[in-house]
Image 1 (cartoon, rainbow, N blue to C red):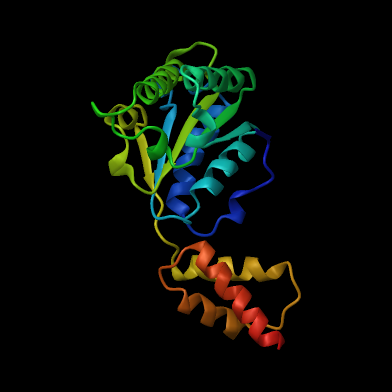
Image 2: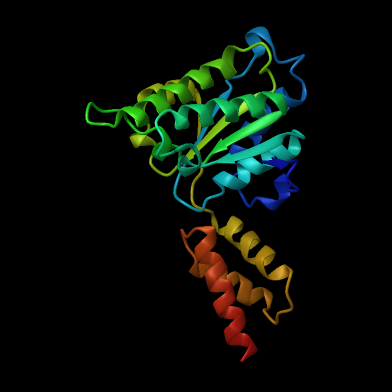
Length: 231
């Protein structure tokens, strides 16, 4: 649980459409629930999908920061247990705490691992935990005391997500790999906090050579370039 992460939209390279969409669909309603109600009330479920390393977690943190909300970062492993019935208890506890700390953002990383498509061969405890999570999501949509709470799922494989979960996440935003402009911004930001001798031409070269790559790969190339120039 993180209270008001320190991050702004300027820290996120590119993704103009995604940022504007979540501001209108998520941030504003969290800030002014008195306005966004009735027919104006937006969906409480949001799905961010796209290649790994494109900023899904960063978007989730920024939503919480800009809405002055408590940020809950959840993974499948944090809600699973070897004890029968423990998974459902953890899910109920999560949503109870999130309701008590509104405004709140529940961010589920790799949600396809948590809410994968159900099958007849699936273990009963896993199926019950998924059902409980879906029930709690419904409660977040309808509970009168959950009007400042949003659930965000992030995945690289949306096709593996259970259909019932997809129905509850009405708004879905695709986060593509960074453009040339975004890559240049990422490179500049990565090297800005350390002393370096990279010229603007070097930064442009790194951005060009990281064509259709994710932030992690760009960071590795920056470190390699800085090491090479310092020798």
